[in-house]
Amino acid sequence: MALISSLLSLQPFIVLDGGLATELESRGADLNDSLWSAKLLSENPELIRQVHLDYFLAGADVAVTTSYQASFRGLQDRGFNKTQSRELVQLSVELARQAKEEAQKLQPGRRFAIAGSVGPYGAFLANGAEYRGDYDVPADEMKAFHFGRMQTLVKAGADILALETMPSFPEILALLELLKEFPNTNAWVSCTVRDERALSDGTSLSTVVKALNECDQVIALGVNCIPESNVTATLNHMKTITSKPLIAYPNSGELYDAADKVWKGERVEGQRLEARVREWRQAGARFIGGCCRTGPEDIKTIKSVLLSTVRNTTKEHEI
Image 1 (cartoon, rainbow, N blue to C red):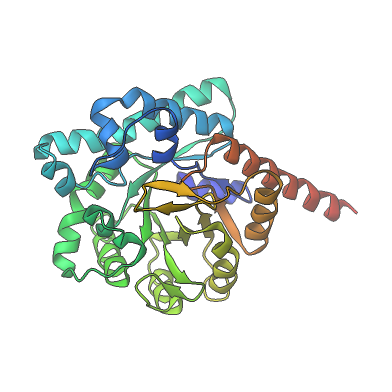
Image 2 (image 1 turned 90 degrees about the horizontal axis):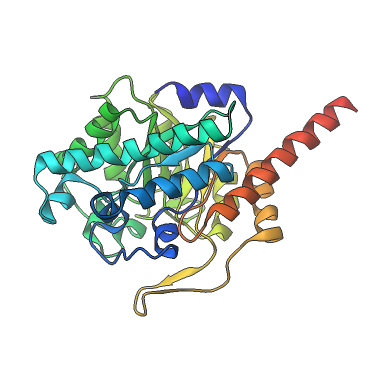
């Protein structure tokens, strides 16, 4: 669990991977299922491994596992028993590990890490609640929902837990309590937001960040799965209220039309993405990657821009 902290001490930034589910879909996977990308853990694990590998080779330092939607409750609702559910979550880590080992052979000298994805209760509801946080679930029920997956990810060897796409402050508090049951485990917490000052459920980010600041197991915090245009302002606010490393892995710029079930709008890529990445780095982000509709080419762009900022900084210091 100390690998991420070690990487942070050795390098100025960490590149995360890009969208997993949407990249799987781009390669022909049908994810029209309550399990979303976790569906492929039982149907096509090799495709998951290949996508992890391609992200590593594109420049990602961290692979986020295919367990975002793989809560034990969600898996059991789809007919898997408890043992099978545990095995599928274990497999999500094993596939990332296999990709990591192959990437290390192909690119010796690089260090790679695995983040165990823990998606929100709102994702299980499958009604867009992960962008609203408007579910009223008792803390004990919330912890019971998350426990099995978190325990399995830790035992399977994930280097860090990614508590991601979190829209609800009560849920974040429940997860912070649950983290105490895994005292040697670190986590990052990335949220969806209403605007640059409020979580999706309306809680002020000052309140949210205060709670995250007080948890030593949370080593980084930020945003994911939000429009890329909202990232910079949110990071600029967050950096005034925390000294912890910041995270940004937003969507591509396109918006999902739930009625037509298609993505619409313009992707942010190439020079526009380069400019955004420079903004996020300047705003304090040390973990940068992509979420929905981003792919390996975007990760190549992100890595290239971040490397160039390091080179430029080094030249300035030499002058």
